[in-house]
Image (cartoon, rainbow, N blue to C red; front, side):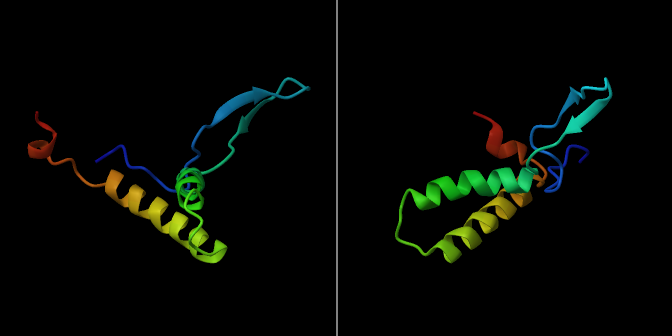
Length: 80
């Protein structure tokens, strides 16, 4: 599979022009950081867990999503 979701690739990379005219890469968050932040939103919406466990779970959810995205698609499950 060529289109792997790599955890350390940037989520929304884009080029910007510096005041001197040079093109710079504005990288921002990695995909793993972005996925963890989104998971954290859902976790903290239910405030029944501690900050430490919520943070750990957010990263675990991000890693699980990346693993799942990198699996070969099962065509039998995508047909309607």
